[in-house]
Image 1 (cartoon, helix red, strand yellow):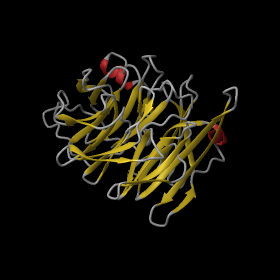
Image 2 (tube, rainbow, N blue to C red):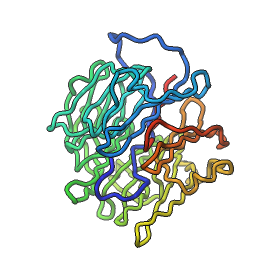
Image 3 (cartoon, rainbow, N blue to C red):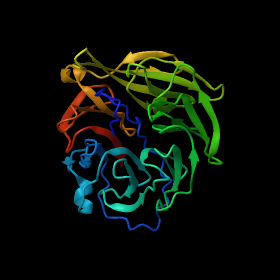
Image 4 (cartoon, rainbow, N blue to C red):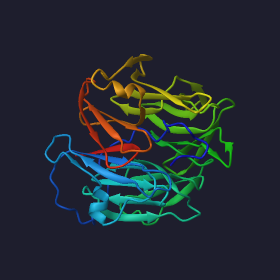
Length: 361
């Protein structure tokens, strides 16, 4: 989705789609026969009101290479309008589609196993997180909804948070919620939900920051991004227990991997005529040492340095990096690098604005 006030190409989307240890309780589902081959699912957001979201799958081991529009092939219909978030959990894929207003549970071939269509009271679905067999969804109903993976047909309830919540992330027994803005008014609160009771635990308020976007957790460290008054995207560090928020550098995408914070900073600025200039870099933050180190060798892909990076993910199985770029008009490109930052391959997706990748073995 592209909010009306945003003209920045490097829109924040929930970074850090994480593969979790299997807690999916789909024992009653009919499971298709598929080869036990690693898959990387690519969600192409499409254009707002374009009804052109797509889902692809890439096989990094090369047996089947790349398959485009697998959702359409498996279901006989398109994914819908504005694919928002993608999550691999257990042996299922979960996708939220903001414009078409639903959450779907998919089998590895992309076929719908079950679907939840959101009511006006629930609000349109945004971002996803999971823990202990439950899926959590932030919605533009100013709430977070809870679903049991056994069945997502009906939610188990909702917790009211703040204005138009965006990114969410699990931090121990808490769920961190980024509240953004609504009807032109920004929200300066980070909501914290107690997952054990599924109730609002606290609101962390800031006199300086607001309009939060992405949440990412590395061990006990919580990071979020936010829009500055000039709509640049910068990073904050949250102390949940103390209830404090402090500035922590600049990043447009964040991924938690191997007890470190990996970031892409695709900073786009506009001149007086709204002509954009983008500068992109990638770094890893050692949380314990408090140091940032540049990553990725862009010698073979210098175009990334001035591209708008819309997707940044790390394969939790081997540390490979996936970088997705967009011009918001033509099909996106995915660049794959190995764990040492060396370029491996570039391929085109089936749609515009590739925004998330999910990994399934």
